[in-house]
Image (cartoon, rainbow, N blue to C red; front, side, top):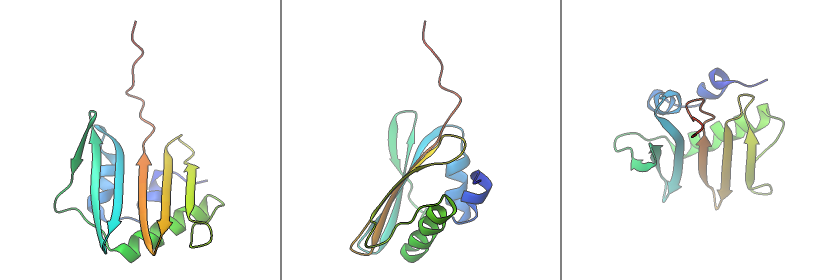
Length: 115
């Protein structure tokens, strides 16, 4: 069974910190033109994380490893991944034309019910 510790091992430190940050609900990684740009959703606002990046090949390998540990795969023949971690967090990815786009939507327990 995969947990955040298993997921985190595939990502560099700066991205690990974003995944673990309590005030971030989504971490988005987008390989565009060989450069992985990182964005986060913090309190409903999407922010570009200047200075945070990841090697494009490393991102592909990371998501392929995550997929395989969860009993799935993502590659040129199976370009979509939509899966859940045991805590309810979602990992959605698209692999097209050799580039990976990923969103990690964290299952946060800080949502409250309004009365």
